[in-house]
Length: 408
Image 1 (tube, rainbow, N blue to C red):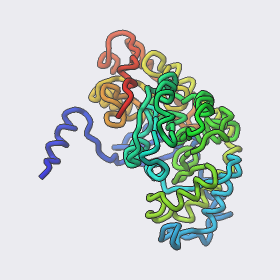
Image 2 (spheres, helix red, strand yellow):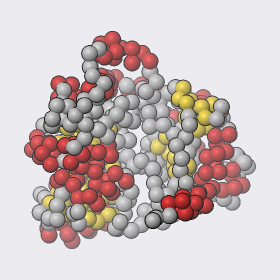
Image 3 (spheres, rainbow, N blue to C red):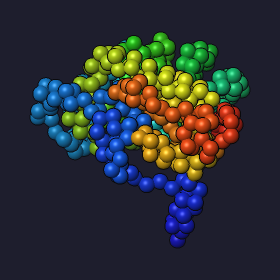
């Protein structure tokens, strides 16, 4: 029998053992073990999850009479009118033919690629795409390559060499990368796509929808290329303070997925009440421009504060403080928490070996005043943890950030 305890002991020894935290949420604060801390690890990017006035408005307008469970797959008896209403709204806002909603971003990413790809399909993915996309690639059984992070010259070389040998090619990327906070160049990717008639572009906007674009539709809206992205995926569980995920696409792709996508076919659908809340928030998304501006202001402030230790990598509200060793990251997080900041260590396998980090994830309900006592983490003589981390200034190299290599 497999020795699970031995493997757990090894994880503990390497600083990579995980456990579920016992925490209490209070707006922009987290309480843990009796200590109140500013939450710098949340995906509630627009700060909507704790907005009581939104919940009251929703319950008064739409909350009555909707079931708390769908009790079934949408293909059986679990399909309610509110699902179609939300999908219609998504298609209209993105100005696309169709939309399809899923139980989570993970469900979307492990289901879409296996449904659409086969042995005649080549998948080419950015080296740093999310684990759910890696799982979807593996489940598809399709041949694949991974290009160096945001290295479009390498991507073009791979396509020039391989694309004509396959019936279709799917290029996969995130728009905002979840661990480094940098962006894909979607305009460049759509330019590449135009040169290959058999190429589909798959973009995951999980960390961008709500935050970027004039009306909050993501980096694709900001870049003016929504119409050129064949498979545009996003989530409701982050900036939109709900749960689930969506795909906007052509009608034929939606219809094909309804007939072939296993996580959709074989899952009980999300509760109708939850879908109604998502629709309620999504309708208001263009109105949250103050929140988007505030988030950019504090994000820029933090990126500048962490210049030289990872902050310069980021182009968003996700700002990494890259340390390297897992145990060092744990100790740094502990000391930040002692100082009143709920920041967490991100370790392998979430990030590549040797790139453990503190991942600061900001929300619009945080003010500059909240961050004004922020310790100068990248300067000697700042926080106590500085002597622990490194001598002098430190800038992580591309190799240390795990951005080399072409294949899984």
